[in-house]
Image 1: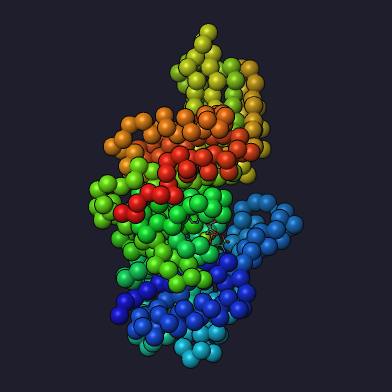
Image 2: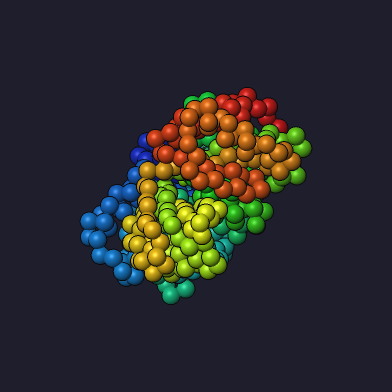
Length: 411
Ligand code: ADP
Ligand code: ASP
Ligand code: MG
């Protein structure tokens, strides 16, 4: 007998027919003798619908950010009730819970709150009495008693936080694909489902745009030693286990996966003086506006002048552009250039550590397709490039084939 947290994403609970299928999976796990705690997302595109409703009101301001969380949290509430009803219909005692009922305590960063604690008493009492708790993902309660949400995709993080608090044997993330693939299978049909991947690689993939797992869920699972598995809601497959590096064979493939995102935009300040203090003058107003900067490049100076380029979330582009125009006047830069039509593409692999030449190979593959690289950044196990967004799919396919990802032997 194992204690399992089973989390079902939006597509997996998009209608009552699918909710019945999910209920059958829970019934099956119970019949195998497991203790089950369920975490659910909102049905289908419900969260998007709620976001658009709020945009229609277009209130702005801190109060509206708090009310947005109240609005968005309703999506998950609907699913908890429907699934609990369905389970009861199938003869399983089940009970729905919203974040505040459990309680899932978060900080007060509305829209991107972090889970601080999960109270386990009620959940343990349910398990002791053979009940299945059905928990709303994505939401919690702040120290001042307001409803919070954890950021888009955050139900994965709820599942891991619950699994950690209850010391579950496995946290199972059920989704609309068979597991974690070498890249998004909807963009590259040759993508291969991996039986295992390291936490480190999964973290880099998730934070670089592979939305199959919420980045903070991977972080938390790694920190609290939660066994995390991604698997299909629709097919009976083993899925992908996220594991520590020492559990994976020594001869790991060079590259494990490719992630990409169109969520960023690029800003360049041309003709800035090449002198100490300039970078901080440029970025200070950006960080004061709580805008996160991702990649940063400064060219080697020529004639005492240089260009300074960085990327931000696309939703922050207009604000960042305006702030930069102000900076340009203060520091007497030549001009501000902005480009929203970019994509960031990253290759990730622990094998990179012990192999030189991966970057060269990546650049050669892109050059063969005549794809221009605009910005490059690297970390120990990741190389990211910014390219024109119209070449994203071509680049992803070329790199997938070029690094032989569809044929790499499973470890
Ligand atoms: P859920 O609603 O179940 O949380 P998401 O839409 O958040 O599902 O995540 C699943 C989607 O992630 C898949 O449909 C797939 O298109 C996308 N995806 C991106 N990169 C990968 C990858 N490397 N492996 C698997 N899926 C990926
Ligand atoms: N429903 C939320 C979203 O769409 C959370 C989640 O599904 O993980 O982002
Ligand atoms: Mg998701």
